[in-house]
Image 1: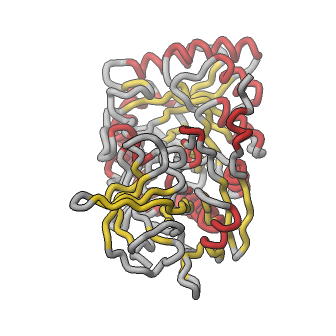
Image 2: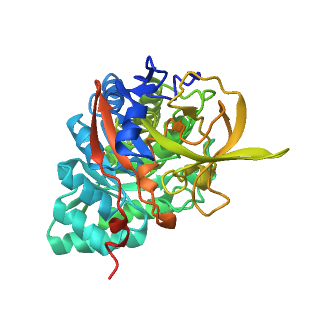
Length: 433
């Protein structure tokens, strides 16, 4: 097997037949039973990461809330698992809120995000009794205050601030810089105006601040830099009521064998000690810390299986291998140049001897899953496994070109269970009048 130990789920192994297995289940057999593309999650790995997060933060600050960022993957099976493992959940739309409630999440453990929550979504959150709403602009504060007053409730609120920290990541997933669609800039006064507006609203209770600097981060120093700026801001606001500090998520995962992400324990220490130190520096009591991991819980636990259809060699140029999925089930390579390292699930120990372009089946030249894929010689029928696709694959999936979205299977201890069925053609037209 290729040296992808930190990319594949920890339970990955090779069977006597040379097939890749995860959670004790042969991926070739799963693909034959459920078809392809197929997304397979290692349930043990999901639970292991949830527990690792809770343990790492509990060792440093016993009242930390670990909030699963459901945008990474909000399937019902995952949401139920997160609830069972004692995580809270954040949602970024009415649809994600509906999914969390349907999965049985107590409303008090739901945090509602979104930079453009409409009146319907706010009313849904208030009616459900969502524990905390993170506000993102002054118009939203006004709308939330009116709707909460009309509903006769007082709503706990965090104000999302942007500290002006730009981490080393792709611009599309960098969110802490001043020029961002998210939150209120501390520089220039918008954040202070937001704090004042929430404090002045009789139907809102300001309980703290929220700060998220970006996603897929390997360098943890940005958390310290952000904490210093936000602590100064909290002190300038007279921060006695700012008793909660949500530091967002962002811990990166390994997508290739060359990636070296930080451990959860190192991330926890970086976040907690930054907040403790900076709040102490400005003379404020240690706030209750919240964190919002998503990708780092589900990313490594999931793989996607594809069947090779055709292989085309252009002499002197390159070789293309086409699979039966692509941008409709894994948009990240096209959206921000994400890089993956595939292997063959049906010949897991075969040495990579060629470089080819792994492409999808959609009518777009940009439908490229891996630009330079190192693989053994491939042909029609081979089963390609793309590791580390557990985050933002299923949740971003579409029906472009009328392609049906894939099935999802959870595996653990040698057993597999279908948690999301494959879409049918009837599903594609079910909403048409």
